[in-house]
Length: 343
Image (cartoon, rainbow, N blue to C red; front, side, top):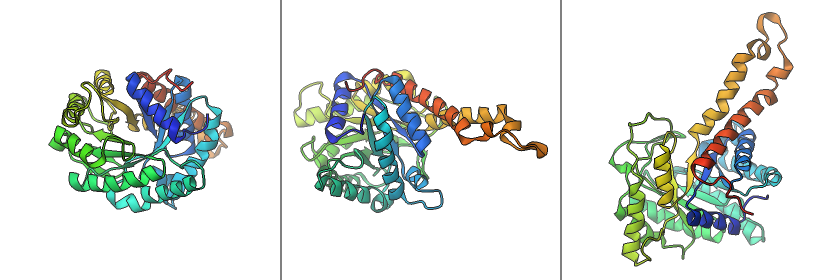
């Protein structure tokens, strides 16, 4: 299938909320990991989301070039071609963008999409994330209002974060403290600032103890009930139908989460869950196994010539692709999106 259109992306999100499942959003940083992600979705018969962070976008442009816009555009154009060969719908998203990188990442990409839309074409990406977790909530939502307007004009969905995700991602470090837990007041302030869809669609990452990266069980307490409380607070404040879920929620920092925690979060309105650390390891682990198992072949040891078939990047690249695709399949099963592709 081709990359999702604004209409089919909206349908993906609507189906997820109505069907109580969520899409894995897989971070990629190369053509190989992009293919692995799409392959995993196809094997799960699940639509899905592929995303690129600021660091991933820099790397995609060339490790010595480090241009986030170049890398993002290259990824999107490549994905448009290769996704046609898989029978699932793929949406493209840019991940965490802090305030100091908006002008070098999200805003230029939005400008490109707006130019494309004005020509009657589709936007380059289907959604972008503004990460305002490091600034006061009032400033966070003020910037979000401006970005939501620009996104709406470019037919793009905005993702925001209200609260703080602990741990480290692309050099951004979040402390592990009470700010890991969003409040009902945060939820109401978000709706007051951005509306309930009338100003453009947005996804909301409310935090409930989330931490980026790898952590041992028990180090951080996830409290998915915070998501239910946030939904209920907005329902009460805005006079919405009892039991409705006004927010399209995003689950960040999910590596190491218990299946029960993931299930509860999806029940409370999560439609997108970021997966990065686990898929990085799933790609690298079989590559390491290949190198160790074929040591004399991948290296020219003691003056020998090695084995071209073993050090050819395609040999170990296929192993990494298979390993990562398997982890994406597992994520789809955990989030109940397996078998939920658009028909």
